Structures are given as C-alpha cells and as structure tokens.
Image 1 (cartoon, rainbow, N blue to C red):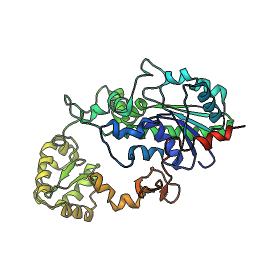
Image 2 (spheres, one colour):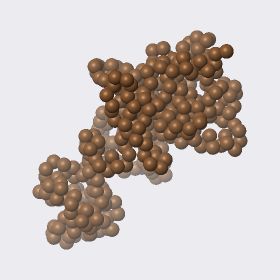
Image 3 (cartoon, rainbow, N blue to C red):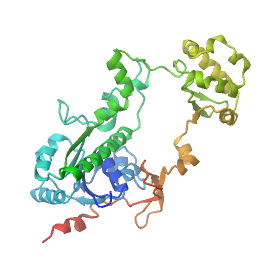
Length: 382
C-alpha cells in the first residue's frame, strides 16, 4: 500500500488494528488522537497493572503510524481534520455513529465532501438498528451477542473468561479486506464510498457453520465436554508426562487404520464397538475413555513419534511460551523485530499475518502521543 494515505480516528483495538495492518503493508497511516491519547495506550493502568515498560496490546496495532493530536471538540480541530481527510485515500474509524454525526464526520457527510475517499466504518453492532450506538468491545459484540461464547460450553454452563482482542483483530482484518476491494473499485470508477463492518457481524460469520445449521434445520449439535464429544478422533488428549495434543483424524474411516497402527493395541483393532465411523460415534464416550488410558501410559514424545511414522494427523497444544519457541512459528514469520525508541532496549513483537513475498523482519516504531503533530499539520500552513 505504499503511496496510499490512511487517516485513522480510532480507539482501543478494532479500528486501530485495521489501520495497523495497512501501516504494516506500507501505507502512510496518520493516527488522529485526542489530547489525552488513545485510551489503549494506558490499558495496563486501566487494568490495575503498573510499572510496565511498553504496552504490547497497543504496539501491535499502532507501530509504524504517525500520531497527530487534534482536539475535535473545537472548530479549529475539526478544520484540521477536514484538511487531513482532503489528502487521504482512506479514512478508518471505530467511533460510535452518533458521536461521528455530532462532529460531522459520519460517512454520509464525509463522502459527500470527499467523493474519492474510501470510508472504512467499524462499529460494535452496525450502522443501523436500535443498538447501533451501544458500547461493544469484542467480548460483548463479537463473543457474547453473536452466540459464539455460548458455543464454547455445554448447555447450562457459563462461558469461561475470554481473552481480549481476538474479535477485534478478526474484524480489523475484515475491514482491511473490504477497504482494499473498495480501492480496486475506485481505480475503475474514480469514486470511493462506504465500507462497513461490525464486531457483531464478523462474530456471526465466524460461527457461520453453527448459525447456518440452525437456520437451515432448526437445530444444532450442542457443545459437549471433551469426555463426551461425539468426535473422539477430533479431540484433545494428554500424555502420561502431562503434555497435550489434538488428534486431527477428521475422516474417520480413512484415518482410523493409521491411528490403530500408531497405537499398536491389538484389542482396539478388533473391537466391534469401533469398527466404523458410525460405530465410533455410537460409542464415543467409551472410545475416549480407552484412548485416555492408552495415552496416559506413554510419553508425549513416544506418542507423536509414532503418529508421524504412521501419518496420523495431530497438533501440539502449545502454551504461549511454547508457541514463541516453536521453530515452525518462527519459520512462518510469526514474530518480528520492532524498532525501539531511543533509550529502549530492542524487542520482538507479533507480526501481521500476511506476507508479500518474503516475511518482513522489522516493523516501524510505535509513535509517541502527538509525535508527528507539527510535521503533519505543517503541510497545511500557508
């Protein structure tokens, strides 16, 4: 995206994540912040954690941007914002619709004024409907209201605590893809326009299998505990030394003989309860209990070596420390060196998930609040 200018009016995660991808892809991204800054800058303080050097949740989505402080509550600030938008190819915002309308920065007003501009809108619940201005966060709109959190546990149980940012990143990628499509359209037509997504919409799409089955058949398979799942060969297990893995033998009758060979348990190969996929479905609880016993008697290394010998598909259940040290994750370009500010020690961050040719090995600095205000707004001085 070298040569494209993106203006971001974003807070917290989802909007900045979308613009952050574009910065990683080479766009000039100008992050407009209030005098107090994006609240994500101080997320650790909000969570009651002090004395941390750096803020990785802010850094991953804001590296390589230019930070410009503009007070949009003033006429002068709004004038500066419109001057910026006049030079932009893309505008990204996840501010709630009513607030944008009060400022005259809603999509209808901005596109009328700048018809070539691609206006990327990311909200919690969409631009229409009774709850369009309701506060979202990804846990509320993407996880809870979409139905996704409900699918994580058996009926009657409350969902577990959910890690923040996942839905924001999924929706940020979604918006970035839509913006790129709109830029391609602009190349043909000369006109920009609105690109809109929401945490709710992205969440429902993410669990589209479950929602689609319910829509088509009026019912869906409920979530079960791992001991009672109806897919014993697509289940997680633990070795005797405590390390865990996930079996990935989805095509039961195709993959079953390989698993039998890897386990080398003669009684299992001739057990009439497990001869076909239909049999294994009917006796899934018994099969899971039997596999638990078999795996508990062996070490992780023994199990996975036998799996690889017999072409049994599996994956390790990594901790965060495990994945950081995973040579495959490293080879796949998952981590990247980050440019540090003067006086900061060099550090490594999480890379964005797309490569253009060879993986990038370094990303730009995270801007200090207002670091580029003078240089960027100086473009408009007479």
